[in-house]
View 1 (tube, rainbow, N blue to C red):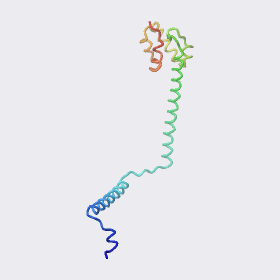
View 2 (cartoon, rainbow, N blue to C red):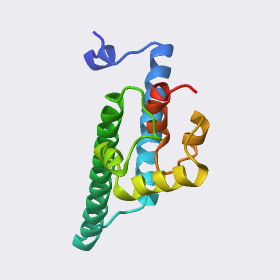
View 3 (cartoon, helix red, strand yellow):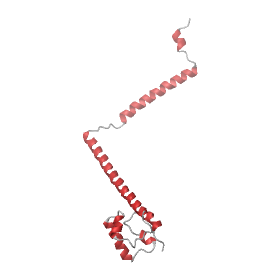
View 4 (tube, rainbow, N blue to C red):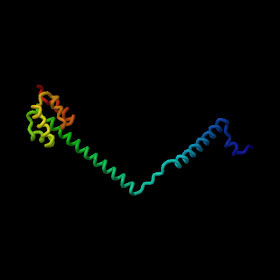
Length: 147
């Protein structure tokens, strides 16, 4: 009678080769893991580092909230401009511009430029007003009276 352990662990040549390849691969992977863990940078964060990280996160959140509020203002401006029929920048006074959610400084700049050039004749002249964003110009373009 044959040894039962020998019978249980008897492999043909291709099975034996596969088992050896798996064992060798496992050993190489384990050695690689050990070597990588020795050469990878060790990050030692203390409370001061966490405070710096939190400060950066807070500043990014503040910037994002400013950006969001500016986008809300822009959306509000776009909505206000959509309600205007036959938009004509030559007829608007400072209060009309402020009613469209533009600041007094922006409104004064528009009015000063209008006086300087003698009124906006083609649409292209109004596009030169730098205090209004390109998005607002695009919104106003279809409503500008054709001359």
